[in-house]
Amino acid sequence: MVGMISGLKFHPGYLDLAAQQKLLAELRAAVITAPFLTPVMPRTGRPFTVRMTNLGTLGWVSDRGGYRYQPTHPETGKPWPPIPEMVLEIWRKLGGYPHDPEACLVNFYRQGAKMGLHRDADEEDFAAPVVSISLGDTAIFRIGGEERGGKTETLKLSSGDVLVMGGAARLCYHGIDRVLSGTSSLLKEGGRINLTLRRVRKP
Ligand code: SIN
Ligand code: MN
Image 1: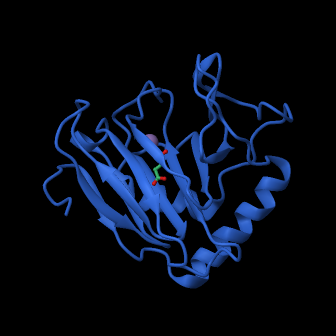
Image 2 (image 1 turned 135 degrees about the horizontal axis):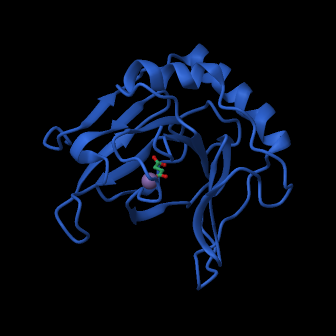
């Protein structure tokens, strides 16, 4: 139950199966140019359990040097593929922000992958929301307040769901406790893909 967090807007089932399949096909084409990579934590070099790639003019990366946005894929050196039009349309309809996102982080959760509580705070512009689109197996999403260690709540994110974190929810701690395998047949091998759209620079 996340009804108490202001600025958090949940759109369950926003994408029907046909739209989910179309988006998946777009992603399959994009990862040919921008393959998933395994990011590591700054300093410790500990690998993430989630694999990542990006779409858009800027992509979020994490390596021993830190977290940052950059215009190219760290392994291929090529620009990230463009954000598909259908994804931009979701941002324009639900984001309530007059400029397009620059970054679309694509997270791939295989069996056992999760994401610790964190805030999306590497952007210059917190006036824009974060828009998150889920595909594949259902995840247990956890969200708290703006301070670490506060009370948290959970929400199940299933294939086709869209979550908008704007207003007071923009800087809330959030993460993925776990992914429930076998809950969706969208991805043949199972697992979950999450797209996170963000405006990085001030327009
Ligand atoms: C993220 O916070 O980057 C991803 C959240 C999710 O996978 O739903
Ligand atoms: Mn995040």
